[in-house]
Length: 290
Ligand SMILES: NC(=O)C1=CN([C@@H]2O[C@H](COP(=O)(O)OP(=O)(O)OC[C@H]3O[C@@H](n4cnc5c(N)ncnc54)[C@H](OP(=O)(O)O)[C@@H]3O)[C@@H](O)[C@H]2O)C=CC1
Ligand SMILES: Nc1nc(=O)c2c([nH]1)NC[C@@H]1CN(c3ccc(C(=O)N[C@@H](CCC(=O)O)C(=O)O)cc3)C=[N+]21
Ligand SMILES: [Mg+2]
Image 1 (spheres, rainbow, N blue to C red):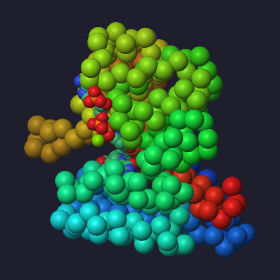
Image 2 (cartoon, rainbow, N blue to C red):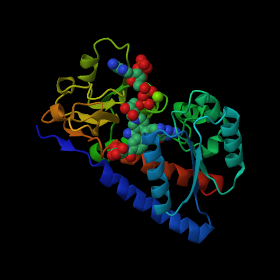
Image 3 (spheres, protein in one colour):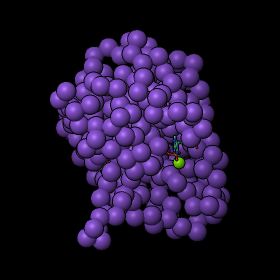
Image 4 (cartoon, rainbow, N blue to C red):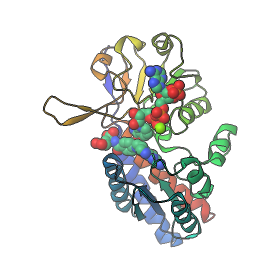
């Protein structure tokens, strides 16, 4: 069986181009420039890279980008005060507080403080709840990107068996909700799952969101299955540098999976494109245009 890579990088570029067009139209017709505020607390190098990429792609799409870099020892109250200020700022339609946060700051408190209408990560309980009961919600970017890639490559997902490995609030759980909404039969697996390889082998769609380098082996994959690898793991190379690998043993999946997202170049670029999509959606809803 030939295994085809899913080119998330190219799909994301196309999506960003469509978003940029719509942003230009909104500016011309409604005088509206969608604005995204990104808050980074601390100097985690990986987070700095993401935040820089987000800011650049936000600007490229014609949106306003507001960056807030706070020291690692910033008190929780200061972060909450900044969120309150951004909630009240009419130029800011989307707010993203980069996770993880330093230990002195309760991420749940910060997420709860964000106006759900501006919660472009879709992490607020109001958005998680709206997704769960089937109302319009701001949907977490990474799972949204996964579903877009799946629908583009498979068409209807109705009736397919999906297994999601990982149950975090930011990836696994919302991914399962979205697959259910697409009429998949969904299993959520996690660290207490008995016989994980056997569960995975039942999947027509296998989503790996675990954070363990190449944990999913080739013989866990049903022949012809579509594999979505959400994992972003930095591992050491022989030359002392590092490289990115996913949660799936990509080389082993060759000849078994039907379709697979590479790391890098798969789900990652879709996350940022969906963040821009959510910012556009949030701006339109706040202006009564959607
Ligand atoms: N591409 C992108 O845009 C993004 C990528 N990521 C990446 O996705 C991965 C997952 O992220 P996130 O959801 O935040 O991670 P979390 O650490 O929050 O969750 C990991 C999940 O994997 C489960 N798990 C851990 N070990 C095992 C195991 N041995 N067998 C089965 N399940 C296991 C955990 O189970 P339990 O609940 O039982 O502990 C947990 O539910 C990471 O590599 C992260 O870097 C994350 C966000 C965006
Ligand atoms: N509030 C919040 N929202 C998030 O969405 C969020 C977060 N916090 N914290 C960290 C994770 C991780 N994340 C990624 C985004 C883009 C890539 C991405 O663009 N990856 C590229 C490569 C990047 C590289 O080379 O390092 C790729 O896979 O091709 C990866 C991971 C968003 N996250
Ligand atoms: Mg986590």
